[in-house]
Image (cartoon, rainbow, N blue to C red; front, side, top):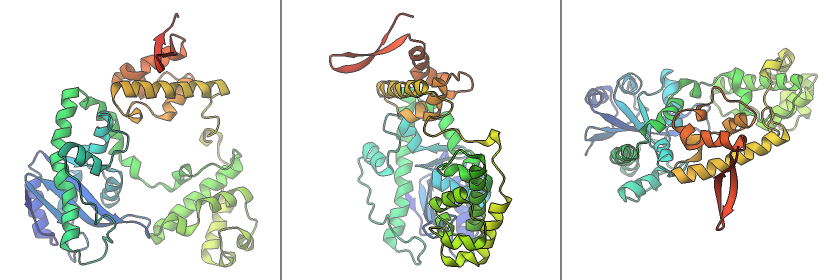
Length: 388
């Protein structure tokens, strides 16, 4: 494979992208830093395809990434990633779009029975018999200049991925499981997955109460923190930590002076501008509407105690059927779907259609209807049909 020197100019990058948009697929990876920022700081982008590979320096003076971003989000060439989530977040932040068509080798590994979060290193070892050198993994990628070892390490991720991808595709074809990936790939490349909407930021927090007024304040405070963190480009926790937001929502300080008494806030909050903005968010908060109230975490959505037990039995059945099919349980069904089935939902569930129904869904319904039961034979837990 032809390995290019580090690309630092637009002309060379544009020529590379012109060649790559004609190949069958490209493999893509990024190196970034986000310890001190709200948005991931893109430091390097690696790409391989058509027998050549390169690392592109987005921090090079004067470089324009437009040709590369067009290749990733507009051109028809297939883009191959491993564990694409954070890479796609970066591309979405730059373009408002996500790469498509897309193939994620970590998702593919789920369909091939290699676990739910198999590492890139383990996949390369499994398929190529190569032990990847991860010595440069903790590099400060924002520091310049990058040395040859760092660049070689970064490019290695896409060159090995270019060898790995065809082998995984062959295995998917031989097992007839290519179509099993469609729903999960669609979820991975859905732009909504990467949009940071301040109005939904509260959903990432643990709900401290079921009171509408407390939840309304939590929603308002989470949205306020999201905007503050974005505007300053700092991690959310640098503004206010999650547990402090929960305390503020629960106790609702009556004045800005009271902020000095809140654990996790300094005395300066009693008089500074950010404290005034926080109080404004609290004052404008309204009780959460009934339609927006979250489901219960402990009892689980709409489930009685018996329903929660049924959901636990479904989880056990899922583990059994996933093991038999040699596929990651998460690819078949998620916990909220099992809770929905246990709660009587039958419409609109992905798990009750297509291959998921054949592998698990029909047995899940049979278990609930009493037509399937657990038994132990020769010390092994198995499923047996029972009289209707």
